[in-house]
Length: 438
Image 1 (cartoon, one colour):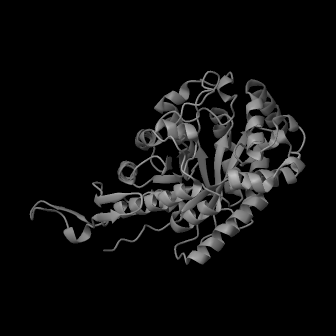
Image 2 (image 1 turned 45 degrees about the horizontal axis):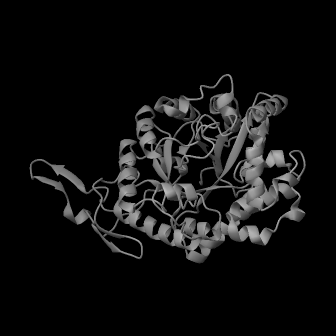
Image 3 (image 1 turned 90 degrees about the horizontal axis):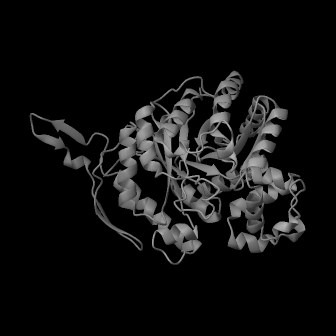
């Protein structure tokens, strides 16, 4: 018998919370995310909630608003997760690293090291970051065009996978009597020359209990979907409405069919910006308090910039005036996934305040544990959605309540695991280890 579907849950931690007023909450230590203890404590709590993965995004730049807003991503994510690995046992550890700024050998070594340290719990979130400030920090005075970024990304991931396949799972013999440490017929070196990289040699790190790290991807453009089709095990999708999520899943599956993909389908895990409280009314009150502490005008300006309209045209408690949006022009110059998700939210009647609560095109969910469980069940039972990547407005307030009151409701409905059945991230996600051959 085929086992019943179970939804997957990840938590995306960007500092003390996803809301820009989180650091000013009376209960929050605004500098706590400058310590690894914060990340370990949060990951242990998510592990008690049986989450699949602990996820760290990354935009390595010093933003211009540092005087009034702590950076959402300060520490190097792979380094942090190496420390978190020692303080946890089961939860997967996923770090974001861009193919635009780094070298594949460097990345392959770092992530396979993390995979070994965590005994097979690592994942790499593949992004092609195009933030100009990050480029300048890495010595690039010109931002690569989208086609160039994705061509580099495709070659980058190809090289990383070759390096991760250097050692067969049984390559290390370590036979003291014969003096054979590794079976040379089970080690495959790399000799690669491409348009962007030239790599010779092989990985210094043997394969992990899950073979190599899980590949996650976050792009929603046609180029991003093609990259996910070729390589990704899962995608973190920016989808503001369930219909957008279903459409995205359909595009992904169609691309996989065209490419002749034989591996299991890519898991679709939409991001959800959560404002959780014991009751719906309390959740609304909390959000009003957070909005009063944060600078909501910056979020309005961000949304207006992505839509290509004057911020003065946006009223917080009114829908987006779509008649002013040049959809074709914005699709050419911005993230198509963000644009489509935002337009869908606007057409559904969501107000500007509700849309900006979801951040970069994600679904915003403000309410009680019952409302959250009901929403997750509705999305999951479409058959298109495999789970969610959660972004709490205030981590230390939202995650404990989610673990205590949402997880049991999902378990009672038969939607979520009651225990970990394996020890690796691949086992949590229902994925087989990659095959190795010469």
